Image 1 (cartoon, rainbow, N blue to C red):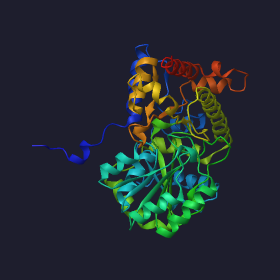
Image 2: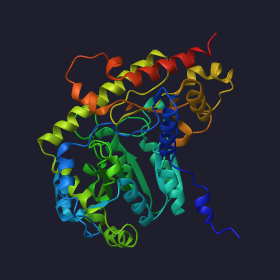
Image 3: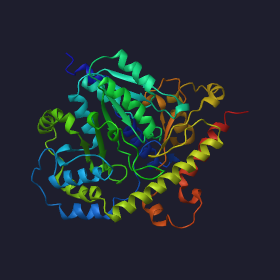
Image 4: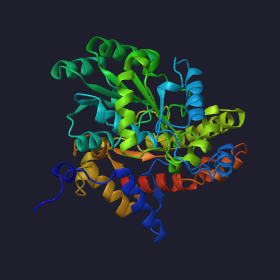
Length: 417
């Protein structure tokens, strides 16, 4: 007798977490050149957050399921400074925005519409919930941004309630939706009654400065924002995220609170106190975000220029810490080496060149797509942060990235006679 719900047999371990463990194991064996597979901020957690966590380490009581009141108020103020009309009652705290996205998808009716390539967990979350997942194809020429025409076609094909996930700056592409891009999509969503989950976990990591444009500023009554500590605040392992649910979608809050009460109950109390300085966003935190974002920009730009020099096809990253090169110009030479899929390409790069990446297939593209997701964060964040004001060549500042780019160029050159 099979005692496992078949829905759970189709979902594999998160590709990003799996490649991180594999790369760590190889590095311990002394085999890995460069870990370009996992998007974890390399910087130390800002000192005000660490101090707040230490000061509240003895907090042991259960907090309200929706979160520490002071943290919810700080988060509402943080988002109000970005132009959003919210109060503490709109904010829900969870153990990472990933969990909150899952909970919201569980509550919202209808299929899940997602532009692809997309973060690896959206489709598996829909599968775990037994919800239809509708991939919306984008193009490299458009920076992998969703077009209003594609969204309109999907809405026509899927009448009734539906949810659209927008991730900007995007994982795996590093591209950002402009206000004009979002306005065109907002028009379709308003007409069709689409609820938007705006995944803004990288919202402060923008290379042009300031927060990325948000759908919530154009369609506030239909947009739920999710943010967290993991990217701009370099505290991924703290596992704390926030959802901002507008008053117009307030009917979602009672079932969301009920779901929280029957699952994770509440986020760790010390962690919530530790998160307070992040969303109070004082001068030290603001300077940390600005400096580390400048470093992310420098690292991404360095890799982008090396990728361009190899004549790969890749949109210029505008935020986050990812690049999404297409190896299509090398399809013939790769095929001569038995490499015809993105997964085969990623495996060959890891085995032959010691470079860890993830294939486009993990992000929703067809197996034959010769695309890879590259993360530009394989460096000693504390060291780079301490020395960032000093003149350094990129190869000196980011030696692992330089070694990875060298290995990639050698790998590609090995197939050309």
